Image (tube, rainbow, N blue to C red; front, side, top):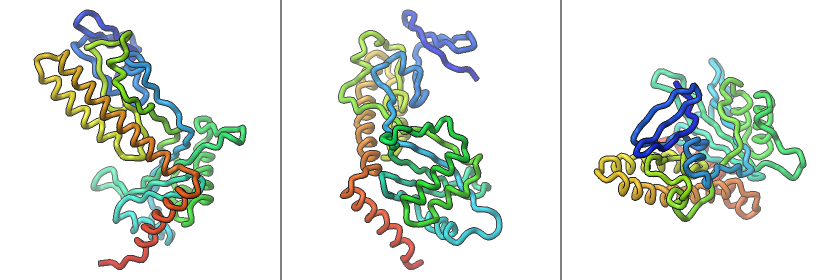
Length: 286
C-alpha cells in the first residue's frame, strides 16, 4: 500500500506521486479518496469540508452471553423491524440499527449519537484528545439527559471500548450552485477528475452520500467509454457537481432539522419520534 501525496500534469499525462518517493503515470487521475481528499485540495481548493459544530460518536454494541438486560432485549426486538432515528432534547439525536459482519457473525447494534457542541461555555470539547472511557461517559450522560428510555443510554454504556468506532466533529462542504471544477481556471485540467465525497462531501443525515457516489461512478464509467474524453468528462463534471451539491444542501437541511434546539421543531420531531417508538412497543404481533 502507498500513501498518495500529490499529482502533476505533464502534457497529455498525469503523474501521481506517493510519500515513499515512487510515482505512477496515467492518462487520467480519478480522485475517489473521500471527504478529506488530497486530490480535491489540489484540483479544487475552493471546496472545503468544514466543521458544523456538531459532535458525533458511534459504536457497535453486542449483547453479552447469557441474560441480557430486559430493556436492551426489548430494543433488539424493536430494531428487527428496521432502523430507528430518535430525536431528543437540546438538539441531540440517535440512530440505531442491527447489523452483522457476515452470516455467521453475532448480530449487534450499531449506534450513532450526535448533538450541537456547546461553544458558549468557553471550553469546547476536544474529542480527539479524550480517552475512550471519557468519550463513552460523555455519550452515555448525553443519552441519559436527552432521551426518555434508559435502553438508549444503556446501549452506549455497555459498549466495549474497543467497539467505539467513530469519534468526530461533523463536517460538510457548502452547497454550491455552480461547478467549482469549471470555475477554477488556475488548477483546471482534463487529466484529473473526482467523484463522491472527494468533491462534494456531505453529512450522513439524509442517507445520500454513498448513493450519490454510486451515481457519480456510473456516470463517469459512461463518460470514459466515449471517444472524446475532453467533452465527455466536461459533461460528467457538470452533471456530477449539480447533483452532488444539491444533495449537499438537502443533507445539511436534514442535519440542521434533527439537531435543532427550536422548541417548535423539537416538540414536532420528538412527538413523531416517540409516536413511532411507542406505537412499535404496543403494536400486536402478527
